[in-house]
Image (cartoon, rainbow over all chains, first blue to last red; front, side, top):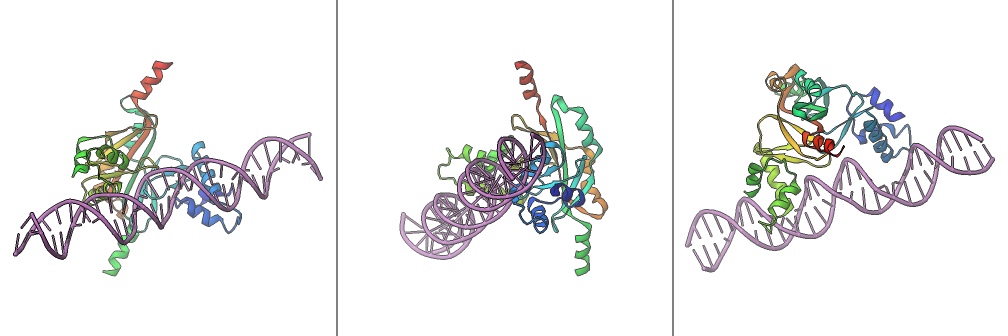
Length: 122
Length: 122
DNA sequence: AATCGAATTTGAAATGATTACAAATTTAGA
DNA sequence: TCTAAATTTGTAATCATTTCAAATTCGATT
């Protein structure tokens, strides 16, 4: 499936629309609904993960390993970061008798690149 | 403001609708828009934080201290958890030259109570 | 307590991402 | 080629959130 290929080759944490827009020229009959359905399927099967970092839009990550994210509020880019060790531990601990299946960790701020741009214009 | 009082006395991480429904009887003229506006104001001023754990609905927390959350997928309740120390450190570290202003950490799974209910019916 | 401008609140309509669903198309096996 | 099943499509619904202009409330001043 072209959607999976896109996820595997692009590490931009794309939204449904980004994927749709990117694949549309190559697959002119592609519908947005299919992209939604396919991604939903991947998430259910554990082949992709859904990120709800931006409250407006869900985006997707083909890398299902446990890792954290960093959203730059200036440019909107999402970067990968290692998950903090203690966050990982929780997965095994089943804290307080609760069964924990997912760990989500993300940061927000301004990325290096945008900070450098700031400096140049000052 | 009644909205702030609700946030300060209820630790259920309420959605806009929960707040609106709860306050509506006491303030019959209250409109949902006002609840939206008020919460937006609080978040901007740092008096409350917005949680985007559930992709369907935003919810709000009057406790703005750095802490993690745990969403039970069975009953939908959101519990507070301490934030892992290493996650907190990142706030000061400004990782890799990026300026980090927010740390979000949450877990999903099934809470103790729901697990116990499972055992009873088996 | 009447007036007036500013600030807040209201409610209806718009927005926009996501979902539902039925019709159309494609697929694969015989 | 035929046919049933599976997938895809596109339109219409859904639903949380936002916009916005009109209505209301507030507060200071007389």
